[in-house]
Length: 199
Image 1 (cartoon, rainbow, N blue to C red):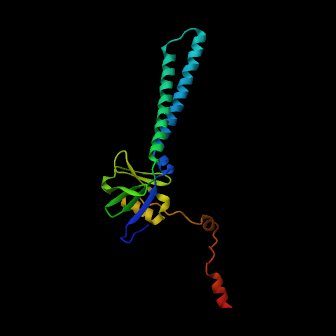
Image 2: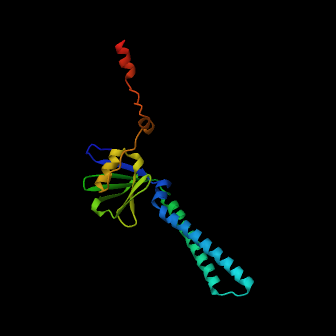
């Protein structure tokens, strides 16, 4: 929302959706490691069984099994780490309120309704910006990010934020695509009133 000072202000409750989109890479990495580990492990077992049948085993078989087991174990470790971190992060009700000014933003964090931190971050200090389907994540350090809920903002305010961050604005979504494609004009909202006046 645009404030009386002409700034853009938004807030987001830290929910499972925010955490999932913020840490999507860690979850994907865990799944990838499990799949790769399982494939290598199974291949190692198959090769080991085939060579045992031929009675000519060597360390190559054991290496594949060990590497596969290590990959699978790392994948499980990443997923457990992801779940534990999510559980700890969602233990308290946290709301992040961000107000965008000309050269900087003010980030206020509320935990269980109490103001627990306030940060002033200049746009030039932002290390990285990552945009997902529903959120803008503004990394003020390499590991911490400020979340902005894109769905809570009208397109013009979201584009204002993008411009402040040095990103290209995106076109607003078309409201009635079917009407525009068919060539029909949308119904005039005051048509009934104008018809009654003519009579």
